[in-house]
Length: 306
Length: 326
Image 1 (tube, rainbow over the protein chains, first blue to last red):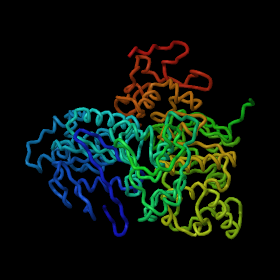
Image 2 (image 1 turned 135 degrees about the vertical axis):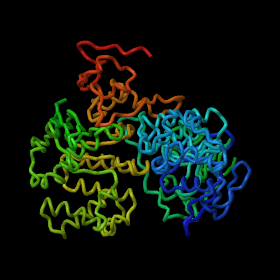
Image 3 (image 1 turned 60 degrees about the vertical axis):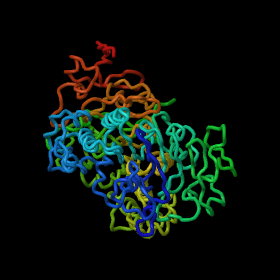
Image 4 (image 1 turned 90 degrees about the vertical axis):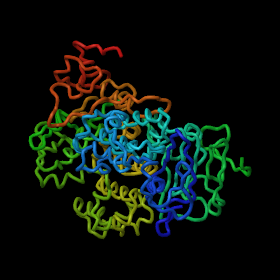
């Protein structure tokens, strides 16, 4: 758990990333996505709970963390020092770790011409800057790389280039990735497993295709339906009532209850337990949707935890 | 079906900023009650088009050619005084960030009421009462209390509802919405798009929706114009353009969208040209997989199907060039 004052930014979140796997973290503003990244990086003290990377616990603000976890932030213009050449930014982790730098290799690995190493960030395009930021995250060959909205600041054609690059790096299989995004289409494209966060809690997690094809939590279902896609020309996505407000942060009952079209008295009273099967779980009092139905509208109560 | 007359007709609009050509020969029209989507990437001129329609070009900006005719009247010939009457009353705008488009020092109810006080001569008292009414109408909870709030006391979604209430207050004939949902989460985005559609239907407003999000454009527009390097490279009915793109840029843009089941996205190589270093001929030539000698000359928009136009030599009716087989 991570708390800011009395606000629980993350509450009872449990997640695992297997070696070589890509985990997607999906959710809207303020759901705790970025706080989660900061926790794993050792930039954010925990109120309770534990984070382990490669078996070793992450303790508070840990300097050595960069060796184990690489980080790519949303805006490469803000995350690269404007007064440093690309080469120096990319080499910095290796320099601090006392290693011999291998900037050329890193730059070509991310599809940048090594000659661009002598440029400054403002001389590169947004896509090239993000490639440089990815090269820096890979510099110490960490077992885990976190990507926090790595394409949100980029145009569609640049986004496609970066997604293709991450997808290629994934396939090499050495590194695990955590891909944090509000954009469902990119998460579906890039990840094997996905966790859906809502106001600091994981409400659903499972294999990406299973979660997208058969969401079990009403929030996941609403989120998927609300995302306009090229497949639904001429159709407005159905609206979800209300807003996710952390100020209304509840400690009893389901956090999504106020917006949920299926809420019942029990949802206000009691926090839902995890239900599901075969690594696909949701925190909802109801199993969603009705077994065998695909429309996502039916619903049944259940008493059995599988 | 009778042909509706367009309420807004833009012809050969060209804009330069400090002598650098930004928009070139932009032509489109929108019918009353219809939505035109303008889609393109950063720096393609879509926002500049919106600002030109509103008579709000940035310092140094100048319309060098063309006309913007709203209900029979050329907006580009208006005096600054005439603009005060037209802007907000006949043509209104919703911008991306509701935090910067609202006055932080003024209660939101007063910001809406101001529209009626300025444009319709209502008293403040009456205008404030109507502001409460319209706040309820756009879905702001507890409208009476909310009207007395300052923008920072509201959430992003509520603020954007206030901006939309301001824009629709005078029931404008045309609304320019520049990335109205980009700063919002998807569940809120869906709410705001529904609200815009409902208000548009009630008031019969023509909407020019500017967005980088092809999904948003596809879900609410009737027609679409694809911008690249300050020009329209393709335009037509939204379904025709998005399901059967005819310009290589539109094709590349749609190919860049992640879709389930795809292994590799068809990204477009390179990046858009700078306005200060525009290549001769077709502006997409340096990135185009089909580039050809003919592309040294700039292609004009030609009809490729009913109401569907693309600016590419591939579709030159006289001498179509053949796309190389991939």
